[in-house]
Length: 417
Image 1 (cartoon, helix red, strand yellow):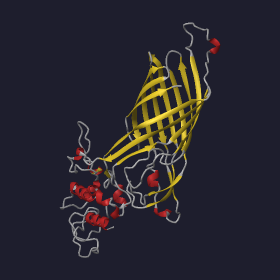
Image 2 (cartoon, rainbow, N blue to C red; image 1 turned 90 degrees about the horizontal axis):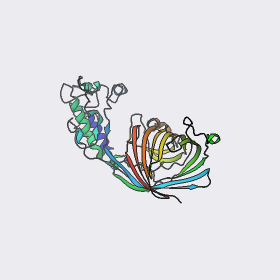
Image 3 (cartoon, one colour; image 1 turned 120 degrees about the horizontal axis):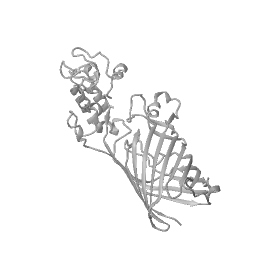
Image 4 (cartoon, rainbow, N blue to C red; image 1 turned 180 degrees about the vertical axis):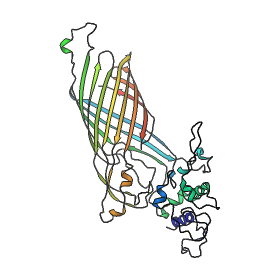
């Protein structure tokens, strides 16, 4: 498209050219072409900075930019538990959720490094963090020293400003549908049902000391109830899926993938003190076909100009948790604490049309699809009346990888019949 060709010409230093002009033809070469190595006279024949050798030297992601966003999720969830027998229980979960993800138009923390206050901003323009008492080393890569600039002395700031003008601060033109892009950046604010989740729980309690219950000596072991359990779970995908035409769009559940899983755990309930427990399990997601923008080069990230039909197979989720609870440690007040670890393995993508599969690069998405999250959950439960409770929960994420870091607060009202 003409809009992208104009940007390419500007980066190459042919600002006086129009897209229709031949190269080099009547074009006047600027003194600050950005994408080629230094050459102040004559035609530009040195390797481009997009050459593989040049990119291998790029340690600060030159050419990358970031979109500051705000994320918020709120809604109403419900859970229904049915105890079929002393050993079998059924649980159903779902909810109605509002999710918001918006682009922040101002990013004032970038104001002091020759970067515009208006996002997006260039990752390579972020100033270095200098440890106290040590020499501050610039975060600019040696790659900048080989860029043509406005004078004979290379000037990284000028090279950065050329990139900002044509790429970072020109996002509206780049993402305009008339420019050939199938994606855009629009504020995401939507309501949807969550996926329906079903759990079948099998459990049985044991009292290992039932044969010495009359032993009340001071050195006797504390009374304890041991409960192993096994859970089979599944989800039905009724939630809205991601809209790939909007970069800020998010799925409300498993993005249209049904799932099955299993968990195995155990609890140790010590009489009149605390209960501790452990659990581990895995979830498998079923594949589905979808039409989506897809990378055609190993260096592409997020913005993909071409779309195709692919078969998406999400990776397996593995999880483990540990819990501790104190039932009515104060009159009518109970406390519980859990630690959760969740790891999602790499997804797998297969191009449906074998004739064009060679033009797409699934590994770009696959290598960035795994994620890991850890949480601490703490809750208080208040007995209002027999069969009626109010609960408050705080969730704190810990060092996630490729995942959001939301702090969550939940309030609930529980009834037992």
